[in-house]
Structures are given as C-alpha cells and as structure tokens.
Length: 223
Ligand code: 5RP
Image 1 (cartoon, rainbow, N blue to C red):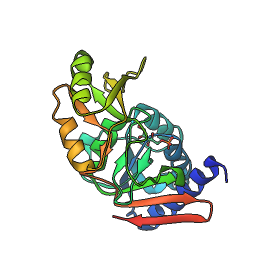
Image 2 (cartoon, helix red, strand yellow):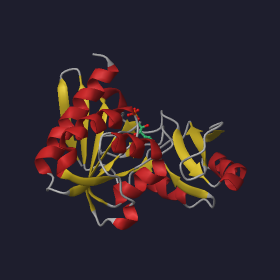
Image 3 (tube, helix red, strand yellow):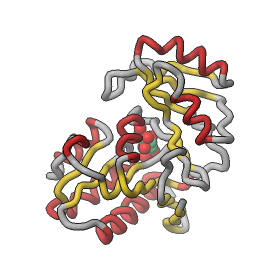
C-alpha cells in the first residue's frame, strides 16, 4: 500500500477517536508534516464544534485557518485536551524522534501542555532502536559550531541543515550515527548543552497513544 494511503488511513482513525472523545468548544493541538496535514483535512468536518486549535508551526496555522478553524496562541488557552502529530521514528515505548519538518520546539511545547498526545504514523516509522533517522536539534544561530563540537563528544556526527530557519528564527543541526539506546537520558544530555533550544527526542514526554497505519489496518499502541 502506498505511504500516503497509510497516512490517510491513520489520520482518519485519529480523527474518529478525537471526534468521539472531545468535549464541545474545546481547543485541540495540531502538529506539522504530511501525516498531520491529512488529519487537518479531516478536522475541517468538525470545525464548527471546536473553539479552535493551537498549531505547532506557521504552516499548520495557515492550513487550519484556511478551513475555518481559529488558531490561538498557547499563552491564551489553558490545558490542551488532545494533541495529534506525526513522527519521524517511534519505538515500542512510544518514545519518538521528531523535527524532520523543523517544528520540533513548538511541537514539544504543545505535547507538554496537552493532556493526551496521539502520534499518527505509517508503519515505516516504527523501529526497534531510535536513531537511524538523524536527530534534529534546534540551536540559537551563534551557538551552532559550539553545539556541534559538544555533539561530537557524545559520539554523534552533526550536520548543519543548510538554509533552514525555524519559525523561531533558529537553526537546525541533524545528528547522524548517534546511539540512542537510552532516549530519556540522551534527551536530557542534549538539552543541557548551552545554545540548544531543544532536541527532537520526545522520550520524557512521549506519546500516550500511537496510531500506526499498516497494510493490514491501523494498529493502536498505548504507552
Ligand atoms: C515535523 C515533524 C513531523 O511530525 C515529522 O517530520 C513527520 O512528518 P511526516 O508526517 O511528513 O512523515 O516532526 O517537525
């Protein structure tokens, strides 16, 4: 089955879950990427039932507004009931690598502020050990070389993502060949490097549920 078909299937399943579980006039969190975009299209069906959404990127905010869903600044809303987003990799504990689309910091903030985090992904994203996908790290621009040297000390190969400026005005370093056998510890160690805004490991706050699109249907994993 084509990848896009799996992404559509899983987005529809997540939409059904959200539609049946949310209260009226609620605010939901919406992620970034091609799988999240399929979910946004579905969400349009219940636009009138939602008070609005918080978006993990400018691109997602634009898409939500274009289908009539108001977008709020997270500072103006309380706890977000549910956050739905994709991932670049997921393991069986629902630890994730995110940030392929450079939206990791806002994604991590919304995940932290949400009661429930549902990850939607096609089956190619489920891996035994995280790290084949290069781990994105958002850095303050002037710290880029310094952070790169610290990453080398941790055993990774840092590569500057040329031409990429995040929605927060920062840069991205992708870490190749990093052994991530202890995701929660690695997430903390990377975040302690001065100049790092955050990294794309979502282990300390992983997903609560993973909806995985497979050729034999959508499988749901719980943390
Ligand atoms: C963006 C992300 C995305 O969730 C991740 O890159 C997955 O994208 P896609 O659904 O297009 O495969 O973290 O920063």
